[in-house]
Image (cartoon, rainbow, N blue to C red; front, side, top):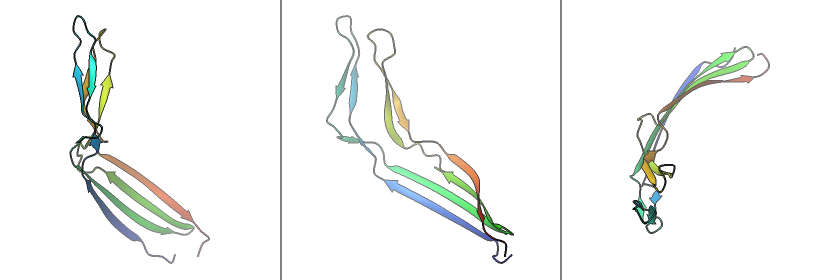
Length: 122
């Protein structure tokens, strides 16, 4: 069959300072005034520092009509909650403005798959 079986592994580590953030404050509604947002200076604050780790494992198996690569990818393998954004919601009672907690980038994810490269038999 020609080519030998091969295995590979790779790790990606990423870090950067937090994304820019514009401060936002909510002034609750009173009997005479509606709730209001107070927006601070644009990009004057930052989310926390961002760290991510990813892992890829693969195994390539020679076949009579090509080769089959089996792979496993893991993203955010440390399951770190990197801050990114705020959800604004105004669907509360009349005059109320709700500001939800900070959100974070995606959770840990694992993908499994294969790639089949076809070629003439050897």
